[in-house]
Length: 456
Image (cartoon, rainbow, N blue to C red; front, side, top):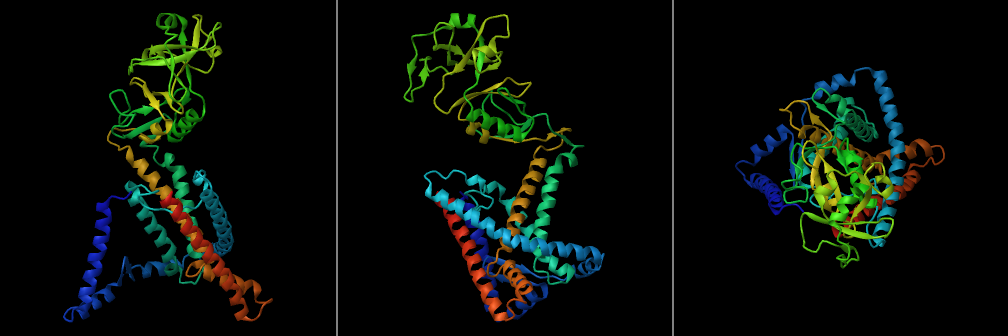
């Protein structure tokens, strides 16, 4: 949730601005000068809203409007076609999103919410407070690109705001994919996932845990070449059975402790009854008995062992070996994290805890003075720009009152139905029904999406 101090500062700041504006407007001595200053500088104030009008860039906009008219004609024509397609596509997308939301509301567990293309964003709930700066800057850039194009070309193009938000989304997405090339002289990729932050007190911290600057190259037998590999490996280890380890039979004969195993409350077996932090219970089978247990020192056992699934995987050495499986509680895993040259980290717990206790980047600095967070900041901002600019294009294309889609729908009906329905009033009546439906569809998505985010 958003810290109370942040909420108080934001609301308090806006209240202070609005109160000062009200006092200045009500003062007979400074009212005229204050309103004159606002008017001359293009400022308009209202509750939680500051608007600024300026003519500083008018000459630049005028020059841009006369550059290559043929290209501008093609550009606007493409924007018009895209706007019409986006208007119909936004209705389909919102309808699909609404059906997904309704199905999640009727389900006991809200699974599949990550599959939705559109989601309501609530700061502090499904938007981390630490990323609010990216969120607001991306909104500012998307809003400016959406609005100021009208002034550049001095035309009434109803689709141009939606078109330019879509193109901004394409540019940001292209920059995101080409970022490794742009940063190649300063950062390299493909060597592993670089640790940029470890949550204090988490299972990944500690003397033999991960540290800032460590390069993770492997999770068990899953190779990690970047952040995406890290997430894929964690998901793979979470859904697959626990990885085993090849151990020589001589070690088992010295440490065998069959007969001391007992069941935990969840039905799994435990054979180390001294609550040792260094010993671990392993299960295995041989040619005589199908299920045996051994309490072994975990680090010494698996540090020099290779991963396995069955005894057959361990039959490559001349020394007889068996595949030992850690006997763990349900859903927990023993995961060996390789980050050379340091000693392997042994993680015991839920794989999701490992995934979210560490922040990583795929970019490794070539020089010591380069900060590892710079590529992360660029990546994060581009992702927010893609999401918010794309969402702004979709929402504005919806045939809804007060949005671009309202005027796009009116123009579309005039262009397509003028010969069939010559009376303008009849066309406006048809458009009214479409606008009512689009407005209801958008309102339902926002209301139910907000309820899903905050109530569940």
